[in-house]
Length: 344
Image (tube, rainbow, N blue to C red):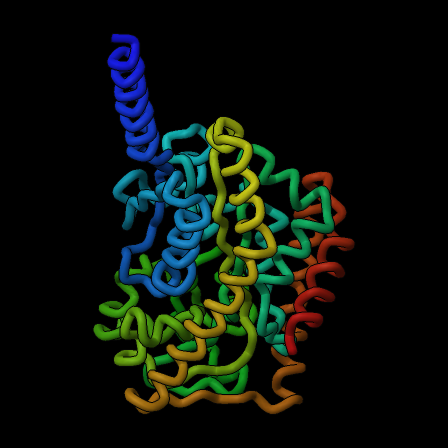
């Protein structure tokens, strides 16, 4: 009788332990929502964001799951960042141009550096963030996972090649930021506000003559079908963020936070930097080989002219920062130095 009782006890123990282990194994992963303005076919998602989220899920052995919400399905672009602040979204990634004035230090990326033409502005932007408390302060309401920047805007035109300032005079150019609009004005062009999704049709109809935008769009947005020339003066950069709601981050288990820390910051910035080079180079190559697109390099003397006429934009930005109680001149010097460092 005693022997039977022992056997029954052991059987019950095995069942309970098996059930408990099975329940633990089948626990639902912690799901984090990711608010995106771009579609799932966008190269920024394909080349950087998707590989990163997949690796993050693998590193946590499936305990973390990132669910992307594409194409502004969670919020309009202008509310993307705020969605991470409030917790409507756990994570958010977008262009800082959706919230002009909110990140005045990060907006240094928009300045036209003409002749520097940094190959890795992402590293420059991230170094500014890491080095300067003024840069970190403007992001204090979220957990910053990465800041990154695409390669330079170019003067992309449909019918007229721009080899001199005189060639740019009077052209109607699409711009996406306030500083880009100022840049267009300084080189003699007229800035035009057109949504990115409408640039192709505006160029096709002759409503605009060109744009100040990066060359990845020649392929991804098929701009190479309507724009046929690209002037290689560095007209500024687009800056982006990947952030997380602070309370959500703090609520995660310590070991998962550790993995997120290891896979954000320098790790994620490096992933973005290399992805941008790939995206931009492929877009430019595609346009040249498949669409007979022509790139134009300005003569050194002409580059000097462009630098001279756009210099007031830098001075105005420094004054703007000073007016906000920020060390504008110091920030400008730091930014230019880092662009040069990463121009190789």
